[in-house]
Length: 230
Ligand code: CA
Image 1 (cartoon, rainbow, N blue to C red):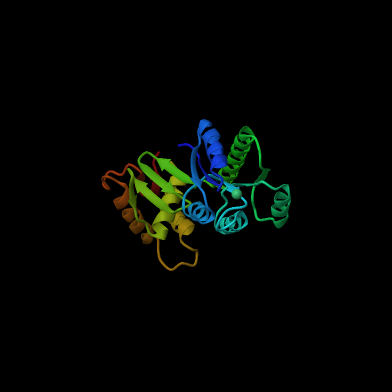
Image 2 (cartoon, rainbow, N blue to C red; image 1 turned 90 degrees about the vertical axis):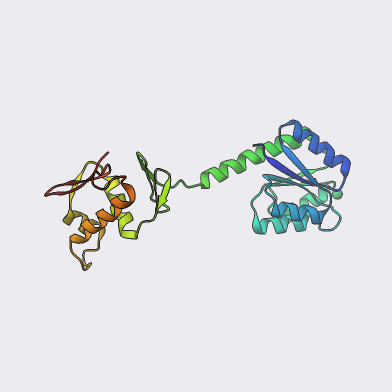
């Protein structure tokens, strides 16, 4: 999917020229020709970058930039016919990412658009934290979201069941006694006995095993305990 760009510009010839060049570079482009429309669309629609003229009928570029920054981090390139205005908006620190004085060459605009989109994408990627996921055959455990799926179907687990299943899955092929599991998952001071472990294993199996009598994930090692089979 190509990046979508909004041009907020009241001078039709300029807006069209910018649009043509950006479209030739593979972008999808929309034009808003007054401030009010521009502000509304910039806030409510999903654009990857906004090219914002300063002097506009209705709401001006200052105000659009200010209101956008309260809600969004979309890159903004501000353009103005007056060099003085550019200096002024820089000084205001409204949060625009770049400034250009008209007239500018359309190819320079395209180059800057690309640079800002790349920079923004890198920023977004570096902030995105991946969830820790364990996948074993049809079983998927998202440790971060604490959610479990069996063959694509989400199953609900209580907190202890989830902890027990995750602990076993993270230590595959290791036999744990019920005592070990109880100490590991339940607090040391917790009231209860190791029969709790058996009950929880049974409940987990009902959710993850096709056939609890012939478990493919959690095996019972008679006289010892349990093992997660990989
Ligand atoms: Ca204007």
